[in-house]
Length: 474
Image (cartoon, rainbow, N blue to C red; front, side, top):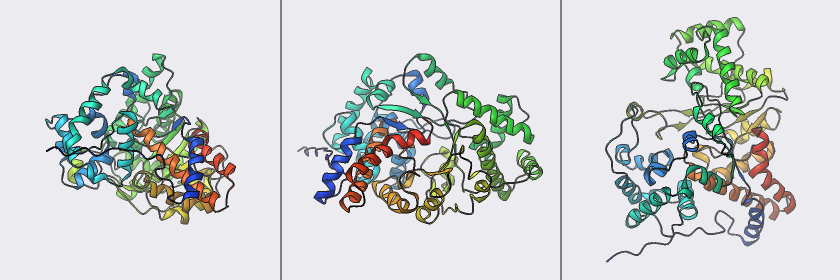
C-alpha cells in the first residue's frame, strides 16, 4: 500500500508573530515590500549561466551540487560527497547517476527541518516549480522529473529566471586572475539583465592560500607588472581593479581569517613583501601582510571608488582530509571569535573619517554585534554593517542581528540584505525570508509604540531596496 504524499504548503504568514496585533501589522508592512525588485549586490553565482543562457542540466546539478549549505548537512549525517556527485579537487567526480543522488537527498530531507535551507528549498519547490507535495523518499522521482523537465523549457533558462525573479542587479565575485570573459559576453549579447562582478583578491593577497605562489606568477603575467617588487605588485592591483570597474564592479571583497589591519611605513612594507613574495613568510608574516593589504586596498578604494567588503572570522577548510580530496567550499569552514575594535584601528586611523571611503563589515561572531560592530558603525562615517551572514542567515540570526545592532547602529548604518549565495534559485527565497523577518521585527516596534506604522513602512522599503543600492553604489 502506498503512503499518501504529504502536502507542501507555504503559509502566507510564515515568519510573522503568532500574536494577532503584530501579525496584522507585519502583513501590511510586507505588502509594501513583497514585490520590490531584488538587489543582489554580493554573491557567488556563475556568470557563465547568464553569458551562455543554456539549460541547467537536471535537479541535482542545479539544486544539490553547488549548495554547500545542503551537502554539509548530509555529510554530517554520514552521506559521502561522492554519493552526491560533488566534484573533487582535481576536477574528477565519482560516477553517480544524478537521479540516485537526488533520491539520496530526498531520503535525508528530514534533516533540514526547521533550518533556513528548508525555508529556501521549499520556497523554490513551491513557487518556482509548482510542486504541492513534500520532498521525501516517496516523491523523489516526482520531484526529479518535474524539475528536470521544467529546466529543459525556455521559461527556465537562466536569463528567463533572472527576469522572472525580478532581479534588478546581480553581483558575482571573481579573482583578479579571471579574464571576465563571461561578463564581457553578457554585455555584448544585448540582454538587458544587469550582472556585474566584484574584485576578490584573496589568492594574490593571502600568502597561506594554497594557490598563492602560482597565482602571484599569473598575476604578473596578466598585468605585465613586476609583481615580485612592492611597487609593481600594487600597480598590478590598481590595474586589475580598474578593469573590474570597467566591467561593472562597484565593490571589492576580502575573506581574511581575521579583521587585522596594519599601517606599516613604506620601508617596512617593502621588506615584508619581499619576504612574502619569495616564499619565506611565517604565519605571523602572513597575518601582518594580509593586515597591511587591507589598508592598501582602502587607499585604492579612495582613488577608484570601489566599496570595500570584509568577511573575516572563518577557519577555512577545517577538515584537512576533505580539503585534500575535494578542495575549498565544501562545507568545512567554521566561525571564529573575531576582534574588530583593536584590529581595525590602524586602518580607521588612516581612513575612518574619509567621506569617500565605504567599508562594509560582516561577522560570523555574533558576540561582536553589540559589543563592537554596532558601536563602530554608529560612529565612523565610513563603516556599515553587512547583514547576518552564512551561519547566521536563519530567521533567528537575522532577528538577533536587528536586536543587537539597533541601539548603537540604527537601521541606516546597515546595508539591507545580500544573499551571498551560489544557489541561484534560492535568491528570491532568501530575500523573501529577509523581508519577512524585517517586517516582523518592525511590526513589534510599531505594536510597542516605538515607531509609527508609516515610519516602519519606510524603513522596510529602505532595508529591502534602497539601502543596498546606496551602500553598493548601484
